[in-house]
Image (cartoon, rainbow, N blue to C red):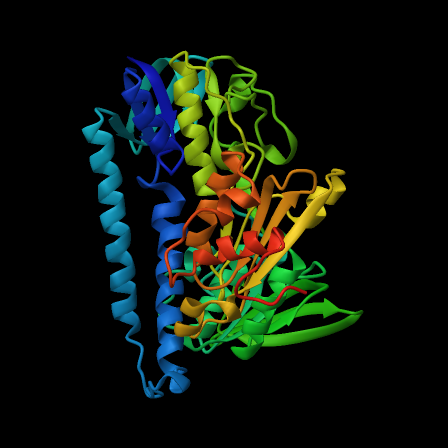
Length: 464
């Protein structure tokens, strides 16, 4: 039996960050990972998916840049090389995570953890079993794809992990679920040459984003030939030697669509059901999530939980943030979670990014707001990039122009949103942004332009 001061279970973006911060705070730390360092995000999630998205975007641009003077309709895709590049990126990052953990004197243990009691965990790695006792533990076990009973995963019925390592670019692909994962990967494969159909049960795709934003993405999907079916219920799938036949119902009519693969992206389930938590007595919330306080502490005082297994958006950067809070709380710091400005990004084409309140959310809470928009079409850098679709939208409190939200749809939105997250966290007003000199010509100066719209003195659009 080994004793450790702080035991971290799960080495994803929440767990490994928590372990490093705990070590920096002077704690003796051991991290346990059953599969791979870096977790889903680095290995089969955020990072490899963005590689395919980037490749798809470049491939699509090369083939459709005639108006910029680039004629390359015969451009070819070397899929084996794409997969090799993707794996190279993953390997570099995972190696980096291992180096960071070792550099911060964190002991790395491979195996699957199972609680015996509130201070003891058994770690199983094949035939090897080791028991650890600990003073404090941080749970960062992440989540896994939800499997629909009528769409059980096979070689042809795949989840997001399988979609990243297909043996070829499918001629036809059906995506069940029009959330951010399904829409991102559907867009990527459409850019790579697949004929894509997205089947969504709700009224619209990308439900977490404003309709004004998703309209721009849907326009882009239509240009790519992607068929989006909303208000549809996926009924079942039949496999054959060449692919699948998916049956769905929409407007009371049953329809079928053939494809090489069907990608199921209907949500993720927290990994809280296989680590023996019943032996500890931790209090659960809804949907298998764990209840935590403002310091990420569960109902068992020496056990903390972060990331996808607690409430809130399932985002890697949220998990990392919570990991730091938990580690600092264990060290006696007064760190508390503050979700005032968690940016959310969808790497569609064009990108979507939002932080803080949108207009509807603010009004629902009784906050009187002012809205200002600035179009990408009026920005020189966007025009030079041939990426004039989209807008920057600021949401400010009516009484004092305090910024409380921002929505951006367009090229580079994922990078632009950081400034606005900082502005909201810092309690800045529209005037603060307008008075900040932004480099020209850049996409980022559109936040300044939108702030000037809000103040009633825009320069590069005519005031309505």
